[in-house]
Image (cartoon, rainbow, N blue to C red):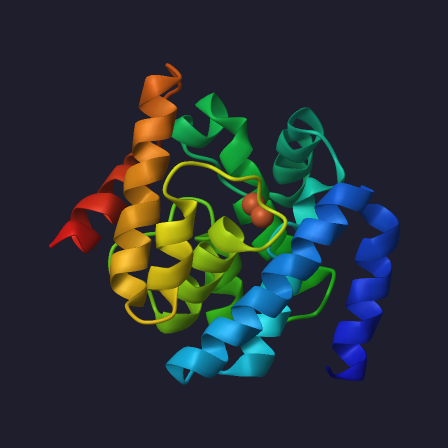
Length: 188
Ligand code: FE
Ligand code: FE
């Protein structure tokens, strides 16, 4: 790990709640493993994994206020589903507060919650690592996504998007249109 990443990790260990920081560390190393497995850039995977939830140090209401303050535009569905906002805000903080200029890393932070059709390898890696990291509580189908991730990452994206859509629908929650597009794109 570069000195830069060590510094960011130290900062996040102070800002994030213990459980969130444990999850962050899990995503970081899972992303690195997926990058090793699929021929991705390990350093970028570590960086994006470390920063993916960096905006979660404050509650959603405060995240919306920060977006206003920084001029980050939010879509109607993001305002309706504040759980999505930390991705966009996180990418902004990664760029302006943690001085990450790599667009590939910033994209991976931006799309880690909803995914998007036609993701880059790094985007898929962070999307999947967030879903399968070892601290995640067991949910039906998680074992399958975990093992699939290491041999067919597109199929793993499809499976996790499908589970996410089903879970949200079953629990009467609204589903971001981007999550649905991700599922439809990777189903083919
Ligand atoms: Fe997240
Ligand atoms: Fe996360």
